[in-house]
Image (cartoon, rainbow over all chains, first blue to last red; front, side, top):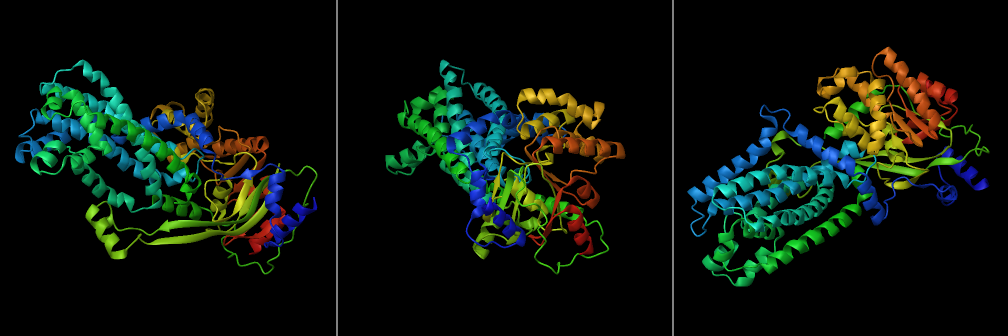
Length: 311
Length: 288
């Protein structure tokens, strides 16, 4: 027991002579580093154990979100409706973007709602760590719980806006078909992608404060590149005369892929009009992005787990 | 920035017991090591090894600079980087070993790194240099950050319990106990924003003390609410201390530290100035 004695003596003298006896003492008594990052599978298990917290936190945030406004939860329906109205007037009526598309309102609404889901998740995810530092500095939990809770919060909102979308699309004359049963599949894949993207931006937002300032630029560029207001095929190949591979490349963008697939489902007239039916490439892209983003997102976020408290 | 101001206000909240006397650097940098160094029962539970903690603090951005994408870009172009970022070296090479059954009080002036040290022991702040080794998972007594003012007390109890890592069964079991202990009765159905500050403090304390811990870190959790509740909470703290292996206590009330701790560490400007018997350390601390 002489080694730890000298270590404590050294410690109390405020200086350290000799090598690392304290690390050895810790090892002898089986103490572990207070802030060691668990191995990846362990981390995922810990995260699963926190599922109740994640769900409760997401629901609580949704409940409190509109608590200060007079209309309260009604805004969950009003916000997507107002957005849809503005975009329809702007791009459909004033700019006349829908001339070469049969059912432009349905086309635009689908694109807008699907894109908004990813955009909101990414924007919220970027703040999930940097906006919760006080919690991270006070409580123990796998930090990925926070970006996950934010994604689930957006998913809960999506359930409402999706209902609005389906009603509106049906109102434009697109009656439900059996193909609508595929809607949950697309949304599931998109959610997996969003979870991964949310985790990636959460870590980036924690380490680069300026990301929150830059995100509006990035998401707006993304919005224009994803063919929300126009058909990529018609604009890029048809109007601009660019080679087909440019359009194909643009369809590989995850947001464009999910939008495209959802349009194929909701608007039967759409998939015959441009001849890219069945869109195998789009299907593959949707699945690839879901799997890749989820795997990479968790891994990338986990790599920095012990450093999020520093700010 | 909200976290920072909270942090600062917390630091400002603790005053030395005798504010009249300014604490100056102790003339003797080698504190007397009174503690029996390796007592037979002494199993180390927390080892802090040459710990350095560096905080990042961001300067306040003016309102006009926030949120606007154009301003963000111009700022990046102009300054080529982050807004005013400072690094604060809060803990500078602290080393000590805590043993099973220890109740360690930590004293020091405002900003001496007490709260930071507790957070590092809890594994919530990454060390810049050095390491903290612990037995089990040390926990801070405090759940405030997870609660939401707009939610009812009921929902906050559930949320807070989950945030501390309880299972649904445990939450169910503890729920009534928390409500009873806090004594807020039918207010539990109302949003926490309608509570008086005393009621809020009672509920927060009741939630955060509902869980048992191996190594417990208490950061000024005492002395909230009216006298009756203070008595209740002191009793609860005693129970927690008995069930926990090791307790660290940061409090501005030196009397509480002298009563409950068997060892006191005096932090000054991020370094240990003295470490040993409560009476001696507190006497030296009061003398400055």
